[in-house]
Image (cartoon, rainbow, N blue to C red; front, side):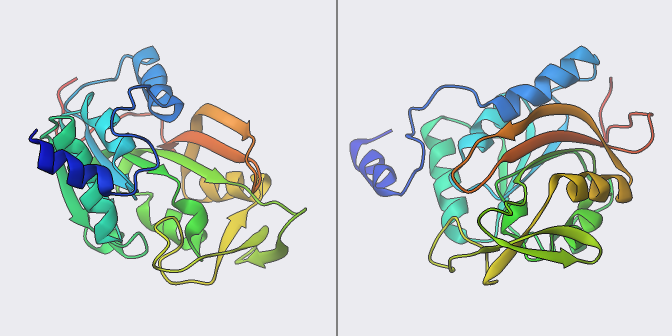
Length: 235
């Protein structure tokens, strides 16, 4: 890559440096489970919801041939694209999609795996969102905050308990799209929602991850039946 292009890329706001090499436990957790069940294949189709800066995009693209990277902000896709260029990765499709409405533009079972990390807790109605995306893929990697009653206001949304979290604005690449407060489900309600969406937790990557805003959890979910059906793959 020429020097001028590299300078421009480095001017972008990357949470993790472009040369970061370590694998993330969220990605590793997926392969730990898939390999244990002997179901991994590079032909799996992966949908990433909310890329932020392409860090996970690149890790997934090293392992799978078919990656669709989405974000509601053009800046997120720009940063992911530049990271992929820097890493000489060319098997990623980039789409500007809103997490709240993306299910209207994606076919049922279009993907084998949804990689959903760092977005769920920025939604004003994560309950409706999980219901909407539950039929888009066989597996969902869901990583999110859980309710923190010590710091935030307790509420009930459509029968699920949690807390409201004050959001930033559109300029903040880490904030919600347009809502002032997002809804964080507590641990019991999150697990109930998963079950209500005909999903089940097949692998817990972590469940008590400490964070300044409250604990985080990371689950690999599979649709309720035990039969594994992957789209357009030969296993």
